[in-house]
Picture 1 (spheres, rainbow, N blue to C red):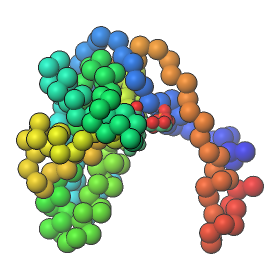
Picture 2 (cartoon, rainbow, N blue to C red):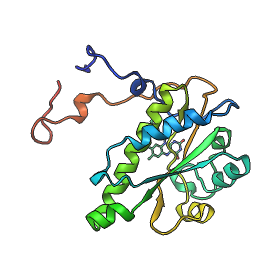
Picture 3 (cartoon, helix red, strand yellow):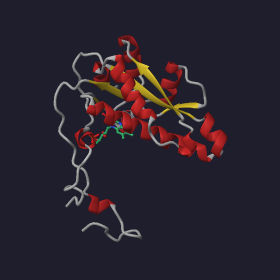
Length: 193
Ligand SMILES: Cc1cc2nc3c(=O)[nH]c(=O)nc-3n(C[C@H](O)[C@H](O)[C@H](O)COP(=O)(O)O)c2cc1C
């Protein structure tokens, strides 16, 4: 049993779901700005804020981005995730390593992607709160997208995040109960029963 259930909870966390079908409706710029701002409120190592976001909002540009995607681990480069084209925008979260590596040396290469991932989760939650859905897309060819977006070597694309107004309700995936993933003091001793 989830022992936190009897306390107030943040609705967006429980409402968020990966959405892969969208209606044709633009996301107003102010709303998009709110979503990005939520991203920039994320924790970041040394507050170096290594995130940068590329927003793809033109149909032709979206099509080009989709040619950099693949679905299924073994289909690299062959089966593009065409559903992404229907999204109002594609946000491409990138890590700019310069500041974090200047501060932490090689450790910065581990930390900066974690910071940027937190920013993306904030954005997905803010979007949910504003009636917009999205999805992390990790199935992309890094080299191809680097070329397409003309990224400098110190900027790494982390994924694609298509966003838009959902075309239908998406069922929530089953999540593991806290009792399976929480340990008390040492590994393999249940915290929750
Ligand atoms: C790093 C990462 C990569 C993902 N890559 C893809 C992807 O390439 N295509 C896709 O449709 N969903 C992708 N997803 C979404 C997951 O399939 C989804 O989060 C998972 O099934 C749980 O569903 P939920 O997000 O609705 O809770 C990815 C999620 C993460 C966190």
